[in-house]
Image (cartoon, rainbow, N blue to C red; front, side, top):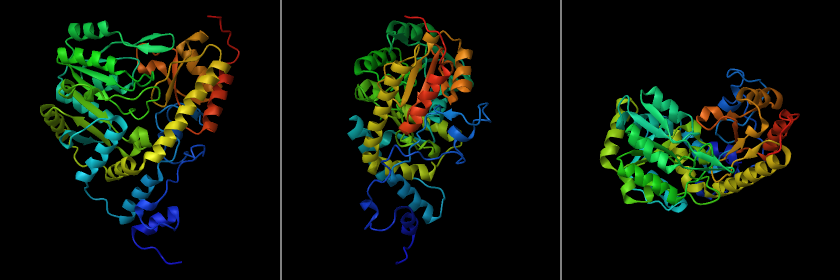
Length: 422
């Protein structure tokens, strides 16, 4: 067999022969039922149980990454970069933006401009930079608990004050108390609002009407909106609306945080795309990044993002449908097999939000049951703040076989509890 030269040799080892060029490769990684071992791969999700106080053999469905192999187009692009063998200071030019712009346009009907883009190593990093850029120590930042826990930790660790417009939970569905939202802003002189859309962990995909009510209040009171839209590609019951794209006025107050990391399982490559339409806000944001000493982005993250948004549509669509079915399976299983537990209405993210309050257990008893009797590692609801007690967050972005085993363990771990009729 003729020996392959250069970077093609590395890709040949992965995919074999029969390709006329890089763009002729068919998508390979569409078997989402395949169980890929992740232990002993430096996986935070699988390899750090004992270090984090968990039993060694626990089944992890906690941290929000997938147990699926990425698009083979991404693997190919990374393999080509590795084969080149030089990893010096790197950046991207116009083609990168056009690829990102294309994804935002075709998937979310959002037109972005190149002058808005700031690349960061992650959204949590971007949150910290925004806090430093647009608020001062002692200023108040509003969030909507229960919500992604780094919101609170970034606010407090940077010397700011947090106030919560806690979401209303009724009949398995979450809603916003808009009067309380505006009241909290006025009384606390709120400078910044962290919007989570789709909302992690409660699974809401906010409607345009809800977003505009929030946006109009923030615009009226000169509140900067940090819109975390990392789960934007996981809307199931309705389409996702980008907050900044709903009104021209919102472009002036919004920092929109996006990333391919959740969508294509690339969190370890550390790349996020932040869009800021207000030039003054963008300059101050970039100034804070410069002060932090951060400049060039990880080249592998850039390469992976280009490949994902350029060639990953087939993989994404198949993965999206698979997770939709996993969500439906989880709801059906819980309702049929686990008395005292219900699942919140799910519209977005790959994170199911289980209400275990019907079991009558304390937070400590529930954790004990899940970890030591069920043998599953979930995210307990209290870490998400007000309104989270008695809930458990379950990551369903895994092969069905893994999900089935996890749910069987939960059923077994919660058996024997006398549940009173509602």
